[in-house]
Amino acid sequence: MKKAVVVYYSWSNGSTKRIAEELGKGIGAEAVRIDTVKPYEGSYDKVVSQGQQEVNRGYKPPIKPLDVDLSSYDVIAVGTPTWWYTMAPAVHTFLDGMDFSGKTVIPFMTNGGWPGQVLKDMKKACPGASFACEMEVRFDSTGGDQMETPENKVAEWIRQVKELLEK
Image 1 (tube, rainbow, N blue to C red):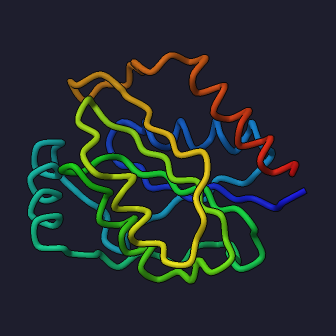
Image 2 (image 1 turned 180 degrees about the horizontal axis):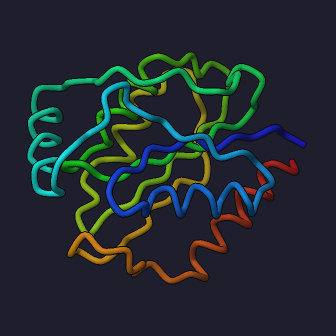
Image 3 (image 1 turned 90 degrees about the horizontal axis):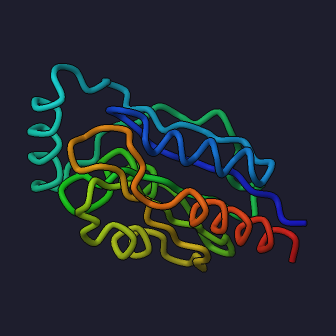
């Protein structure tokens, strides 16, 4: 059986955290959160504006070291919310610092109806990796925590990831 870990970034209402933890529980893997060195502060609107500026200028915020040795895993699931049609800047920092040679990456993302190019951008940022079981999970467009993707679709995705690990 392949060894897996779930790495994710989540900020506002925890949608990505929710999916990451559900995946981790479903496949028996630890879910590890990416945290920025300097946390985002202020209102939702202020952070959204800051996020837009960061994405537009390609800023990659410093992140705290993860409490896990990723080199010991065969499969790394990476989750991000959509920030201005791409991955959150903290996830970009994480991906840029990794060697994915020989690893299988399971990219997943959450969004409020505007998926953009997140999965494509994630794949581009993981040279040397193979990819499997990518997933987009949609939540309501008001920034709330109401999941619009059917729960059975998420459950089926988790089953496919589990099957991949057993090969």
